[in-house]
Structure formats: structure tokens, C-alpha cells
Amino acid sequence: MMAPQFDFYNNLLSNAEIRTREYWGHEGCSFCEQLENTGLSIWWNYGFDNTSDENHHRPKHFDKAELRGPWTRYEYSTQLEFSYMILKYHEYTKADIKQYIPFIESCVRFYFEHYKQIYKENTMSEYDENGKLFISPSTALETYKNTVNPTDAVSGLRAVIKKLCGLPQYVDCAYYEELFSHLPQIPTVDIYGGKCIKPADFWSGCINFEIPELYPVFPYEQYGIGRDNLTTAIHTWNHVPDGQKDYISWHQDGIFTARMGLTEEAREINTKKMQNGPRRFPAFWGPGHDWVPDHNWGGSGMIGLQDMLVQQCQNTIYVLPAWPNEWDVSFKLHLEGGITIESVYQDGTLQYTLTGEDTAQYTVIDCLQKQRTD
Image 1 (cartoon, helix red, strand yellow):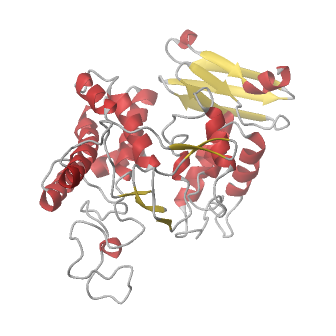
Image 2 (image 1 turned 60 degrees about the vertical axis):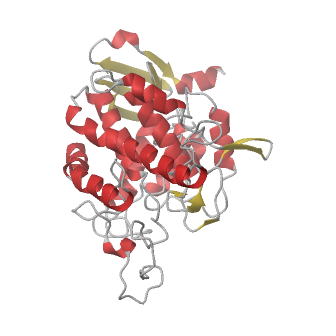
Image 3 (image 1 turned 120 degrees about the horizontal axis):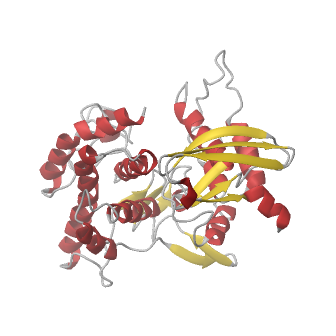
């Protein structure tokens, strides 16, 4: 099911690159949030001059390059998410991803070409005073508007480029190491008695219900179990603004909490998330924020459930990292490196089997046993 999604973007790469050259005169692909099958924005976001909807009416003086819809204006981070997904697909399956490398490189090229050009037009320099890319005007997902260095884009670029630096069979690693040195840090602030990840360095307002400040936890795997600054991620979660948390639709709260090892919250959220939908077919959830059936609802629920069962950080496998001690379970899941884990947890005892090549290189941690020992 994943390859057709990758192919969708890959097949439309030329259009997205032509779009960029036409509007801004530089290289790289610019896939907007919410696409037509042409690779261009849906009309509802781009806007028309013959609609009375003020959020989608397109005045003649409006910048032809940008979307009129306020939610998706300046949002290009979807292409980073798919780039990272392709790179993770390679890690899980060991499949050859040569055909997708031009798409990934073009996604990265857009961010550097685009924001260096804008910054130079205003300051005569391509990078800021610290030699870092200045990502603005932008948006943190659809939620925090008119941002500088939005966390979803910053963490996405850092994750994608770091992966590229380890793929000499596909790219010039020295080139991407140089690009990585110009990336801004993930925005943080000391507040509420600890360090929190910010949605961006700066923003003007908030119009939606997402939590971009936790994108370094998921999907980009820079904070979490087995990684540095787990306490920062948890502190951030504990101080997410009122109204931003939810379990419905595409909300990733069940994934975030599982990735941080917050068992009780992961249990509560994912139990709600995976309840039967209110229709004849149990998996017909929604509408939530969008439509029926809401495949995002079930998709985010499946990821949250799987992350409660097993997580991986390099060669360390964490089994039942956010699983209630009193729940018996059996499962079989794929891990990175082309291996699988098959496990049974019953009456407080865990048994597991790793299958694949060179399984001896992996360390398996029974998280429930560790909790009981601690």
C-alpha cells in the first residue's frame, strides 16, 4: 500500500518542479498540502475570483504563487513527511529506493533555494547571522501562522537530511552534511519549570488543533524512548495549550503518548481511538474533522497501538514500552533491518522471538519487567 503513495508524488515531480520555477524562478519541488492528481493545489485552497467565501476568494492583487486558504498557505512540509517515510521504508525492507531519490532531493532543494532566496531579498545574505536557514514566511502545520522556523519543517529537514547523510550509495553525503550544518535547531523554551519544544521560533496566531511541537517525537524520531531529551518531550506534552489535544480523526495524541512511554494516557487515548465507529461497518469512523469513512482515524490508531507494543531506537528494541501491565497480548510486527518480532505477554511473563538476518546485533528490553525492577 505504501509504494503507490510514493509513486503518486514521484510521477508528479516534474509538475511540482515546473510550478516552483514558474512562480519563484528557482529549483526544487513545491507540493502543497491537499493536491489534485496534477500535483497542483486543489481549487478550494488556491482560491477563485468568483466565490463569496472570503477565505477562498482570490483578489487580483494576491500573490499568484501562494494559496488563498489560510490553513494551508505556506505549507510544504507534507513532502518532507513522504521523504522521511520513503527513507524509513528503505530501513524496514532494505528495498532499493533509487527511483525515489530525485523526489527526496528535490524536496530538500526547495526549502534551501526558496528560503535562501527570500532571506537574501530582504537582507542581502542567504543565511542568518548564525549561518542558519531562515524559514519564513511559513506555517507550523495548518495551525500556527506566519511562523519563523516552524518545528514540523525544521525537524523534518533535520531527520531527512540526516538519513541522506548515511546513504552514500544514493547521494553525495558531503553535500548533505554541509546542508545539515545550516539547519536551525528545533525551537525550545524554558517554561513551566522545564524545557518545552515550541511550535516555531515565532508565530502570529493559531487557527487549528494540531501539535507541531511534538513532530520531533512523531514522525521524526528525535525525541522519545531511548533518545535524548525524553523529559523535554513529556514536559512539552504536559503543557500543550488547551483545546489542542484530542483522540478523534487524524489526531496523533495516542502515538505521541506511546512514543513517550506514557502508558496510562496511551491506553486511554488509543482505547477511545479504536472504538467501533457509529455505523454498520465498525471501521467507518468520522466525520471527526473531515469525512466518513475517516481512514486517518484508523491509521493513526493503528500506529498508536503498535507503538504501545514495540519501538526501536537503532539496535535496541523496546517491547511493551507503553503497555498496561494487566493486559495480556500476542503480536507479530515488522522492525527495521528486515526483521520481525513475534511476542506473547501473558500473566506478567513475556516471551518473544526475533526473525531475520543477524538478529544477534539487537538488544531487546522488556519494558514491563524493567518497570517492575525499578
